[in-house]
Amino acid sequence: MSTYVISDIHGALAEFRTMLKKIEFHYDGSDELFLLGDYCDWGKEPLEALRFVMELDQRHSFVHCLIGNHEAMFLGVVLSAAGGGQGFDENEQNWFFPNRGLDTWKAYCVLPEEERARIAAWLEQLPYSAETLVNGRRYLMSHAFPYFENMKYSPAERQRRRSDALWRRLMIREDPFGYYEGSKHYDMFICGHTITEYYFYKLRYEKGWPYRKPEEHVYNRIFHAERFIDIDCGAKCLNCEDDPNPVLRRGALRAQLACLRLDDGWECYVHPVRHRYQQVIPEVKLPEAKIPDVRLPELRVPEVRLPEARACRVQLPDFRPGNLRLPEIHVPELRLPEVHFPIRAETTDRKREA
Image (tube, rainbow, N blue to C red; front, side, top):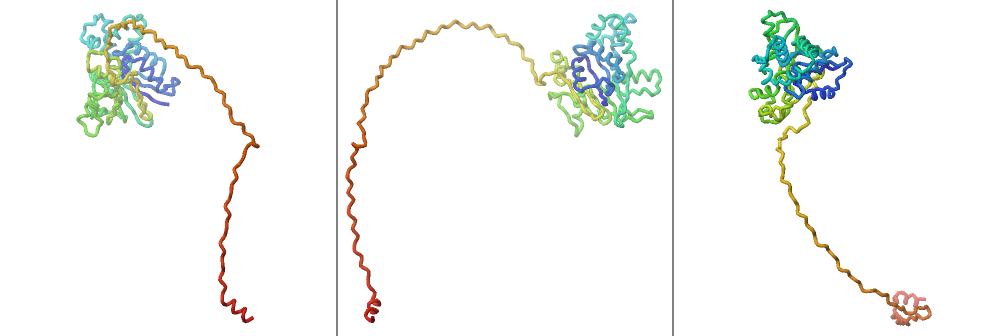
């Protein structure tokens, strides 16, 4: 059994489907999936991504979905429209334009009334936090900032804590459990909401941390602080490679959808198949070139006649063994000179004695 955590899909439905295949997620209950909010807006399929996540949440008990600030804005506009709102409220305008929720709203408005009511009911029941125990470590998860369901708050305090859970950005050295007064012990907090590039940029003030310069074209990675893990790697910018805003265009070069497996800390990423140093080259249309019709003169090779070769008759001399005469060879006479051996005197004396 494996436990996975994903956050900030932001309409990147194709990348989310790819992620589920890449991690080989099992739908038989052996795996568990936590989704930390922000399923709609920004991407190519904002409402389709939210509806797909909703189907997973309603169909499988091992899929746990939390609310993000974009779902909260979406729900606020739905409730405002039900009360007669015309979409001119400051909060509605904030969601439509700066937070890119207009496409989500347009797609929502053309749905059948029954489907719209189903989406609104699902948004209203989304929790603000979840926790799980993996290998003896207890993890608390919220979209942006810790929210403790077991704590007793006043109505005003509860509203503030829920707002923090959706919008508040953790500082790089902040302890997310610093104000917790409950009896449970949490080992780590996991969130999204803040693109991890923000923390890597802040590391220029820290010594011994892997600081990345803003102009470096590297993909965003999951950020591990001392007491929290941020897994938002900027998937909302996946569709911003041609955006008029240069900051978003740069963000598109780094954007990824990230997944963290709590069992062993394995990280998985999905990004579009494009080179991170890709530059948009405008299409250049060259004028049509007309090539004149060129006719080459016909090349004729003159006929070459070689002289007729006739074989001549060759007569070899008649060679017969009988006709072969060898010349006489005279060897000079070999004469050896006379050799005289000396006679010893001792031999002559013996003859005399005899």
